[in-house]
Amino acid sequence: MSRTDCRSLFLCYSKPGKDSLCHFFSSHPQGADDTVQIWALPSTNISVGGNLTILCQRAEQGDTFVLYKDEDIVSEQEPAGAIAQFHIYHVQPKDTGPYYCLRKSSQSDFELSDQIDIIIEGTGNEVSRQNTDYTISNTVRLALAGLLLTVTILLATENCHTKKSQLQNEELSHYHYNIYSIQC
Image (tube, rainbow, N blue to C red; front, side, top):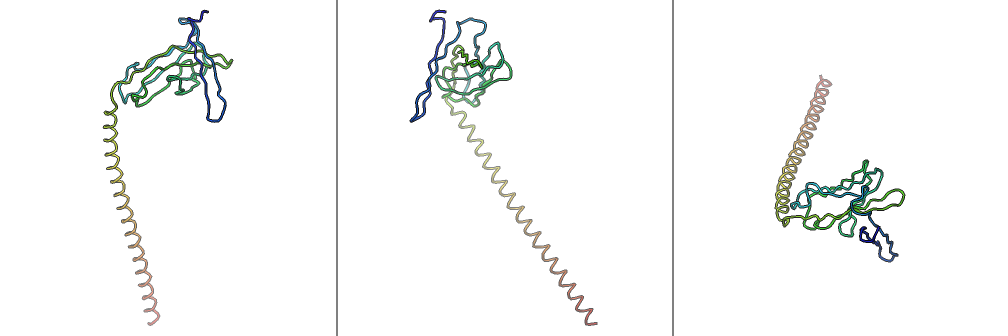
């Protein structure tokens, strides 16, 4: 296999004050039967606020898939079958960019998919206007719930006070009755 037939990636992870951990990953030649496939649903072009699913597949089951955007890990998954589904909800312009999958097997074997370019269309203003509508309706709902709670507390307090008064009146009338019967 010549160097031009492979995709490779050198990733390093580091935490402040700690040593870096680096890995070298390479993919099989393009067109090989056992390469990792990647695709996006509904498509690679999606509107702001929409939902996106990126799928990674290989013929064998039992592998772990890692989804990358640029050089950053988006998510990791060990699917029950041969296809990993990575869901991205309410996409924003920041989600635009190249994505690819890394397949890891239990034998420390690694393989990269081809890259797909996700394009998020729109400015995001549509979504913020929608969120404002939800905020207003949620505020109205909370105000109504607070009003209902206040009325319930007032009714319960009034009911408790009424029952207490009735009990006191019954005790007093019973007491007067006993006094009256004693005087007879």
